[in-house]
Length: 571
Picture 1 (cartoon, helix red, strand yellow):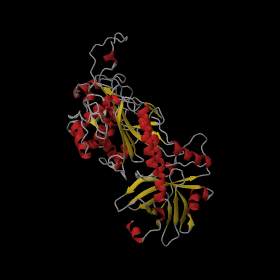
Picture 2 (cartoon, one colour):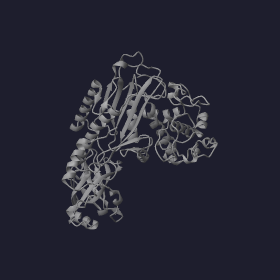
Picture 3 (tube, one colour):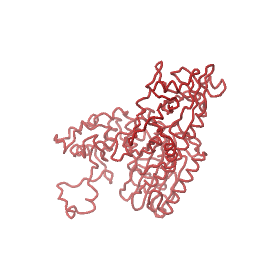
């Protein structure tokens, strides 16, 4: 996947080159929560451009991110945590294409739409981790796997660190984040089924190869665990990434031990039934008229998968704090643009120091079994509260969906990078004044990450000059004050209250020569008065999302835009 935000980055680069000052944002969204408005000119134009790009992709089998198979049938949907003006819940945009070869097939559907059923294969990892968090909580991620599967330790016949696993060192969390070091599969590799090992110069085996779980064969948990207990590690736990199907099989067994019921029942009870995912099943549906190459596995539609993605973004099943812990990196990879989560593969976009970082949490499945050639892709952008889902089937080879995902990210995320600051400027950008005292601030947007405070007066005093003196900055105009949302939000009233923290920077400070460090997080809450940070600002918003006032707790002052007294009393 190649992640680029070209136009937005170009704008920021122009400002960065015009001014030596480089903002150092706090990690997270640079602007307040974004609200979907499909009638917004930038968003509407982006969705039209996305349709044109995909039309070209399917008509020419090539696009801005490479070639694609002409035999791929696919469905794509975009969803938002805040549905805003969207009319087609749970998504605000969809696109479907059925390949000519599949439309002529005898089995399954000849039409691809929001009700088409696809196999999602490896995307079940997300649902497995979700069920783990729902049934046991995220505290168990630090537990050794032997707490729930003690027979793993009992099955180890030797203490050879290379040949066998010290199972007490393997945690549940490592297993769900591709950092367990476990072997990949409980089966023979595919080439043993395609050619004679002797002809390929492999030595004879003393035992028959084990068939893969899922190839028409049900795995016995006790046999599976006994086999795995004596399998060598790929690497020690927590050292490097290596994908393991067996790790997620074992997570399923752990869930069953915790819940006291089959994994399929846990999934149905905790996720599918609660969210109303009525078209998602653990097995092929009895009616295959809507199926896209149906075979036995986990099946869903683009509608149900969008419901699931929306529920993750909205913390529908988990608490917000638990969701925030879930949607976080666990480890770097050898590619500095990629990280790993539980079980996410995280693509980091943005163009630091010109834009804030934008992480896309993804899970990709690309596999084929028993003639079923399918791929699926789920992507969540937590900072913007948006997600995309791609489901596909092919008649010749599992589809390569990176080209589709890259087009989505290029077009849609670039539009979000433009509209989020525009919304912030419209909703927050104005002068706020106190009543009965000469105190005020002016909030604006200047094309750089975060909102900025241009004017700051406290009790008749230029408070920018006071802050500059406290920070050792010689000239008040050399102090940059930029506001970043902390995601602390109180929405218990008719509107909401949103907390921000300011980052104070000396714009005349010499930039690092070739080593762009950003450590503003070390100075958060550094300057305090009366137990409250001088960098703390709490905005009051009305039901329409417009900021009507701001509180500065350290200065014990409430500032208001020009508004009526009733609105002030409400907040």
